[in-house]
Length: 286
Image (cartoon, rainbow, N blue to C red; front, side):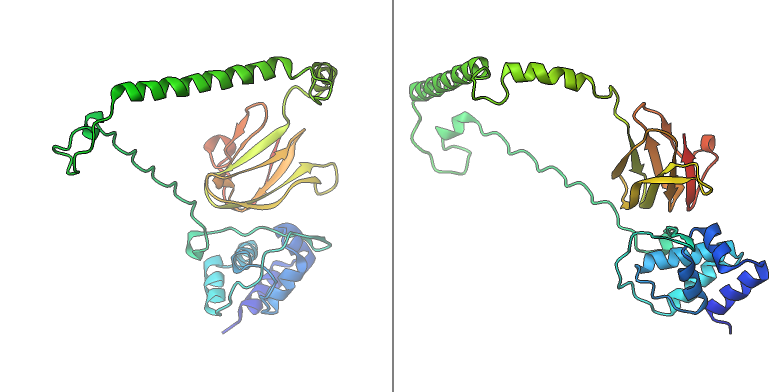
């Protein structure tokens, strides 16, 4: 029976592509593909990413991806290494894995704690009567004493409020105060020179997903400056980046993200209006 590496190498040669061409097509580093074909799966990455790379490579070679991943799981490899940031080597960019439910490595979003019930209010009369409360009857509280205490506390609060208002009105123009009125006036024109609208765009995870963002460049591969490094976000969490023009967004599961830019435009890659983009891969957002 052929090993995983032998099947991958045979399928690649049958397809008539080199390691470099396969790396450029799958966006997986060439040295990772060479190790796969040599049955070496210790890439220094979490097992989740190794399975995702194997799945993507098998799909590119038209092999049964589920069978390849199941055979890898049968080898008993443990995910002992921490994931590393993708590097730009001559073999191509590192791809991100397609996380599936069978991998069992997804982390569910923490459920919000249920609010504790508010303590029930006690009838004021229960302090003066012992009947029906299950507690021994105590001495009755003089209502006039309660009124005097309340008036005293109210007076203290009024005095403190007057002092705070006076400091707010007259303390701001003190010469030693760094936030004086003169300084505020000189800071106003600088603030007006800032852009009126925020240029940040926000990615919201609809489920567990890995994302990475580049500015769209003019080079042969179209990738420009990296705006967001490889980031794993869980359901309900967000990741933001500065968007001043078209960008390339890579996601391990494109149907699991929603993008909203500063102008309020929204993209749902997995919706019919956006071509039902699903699975791992890049997409261009204007």
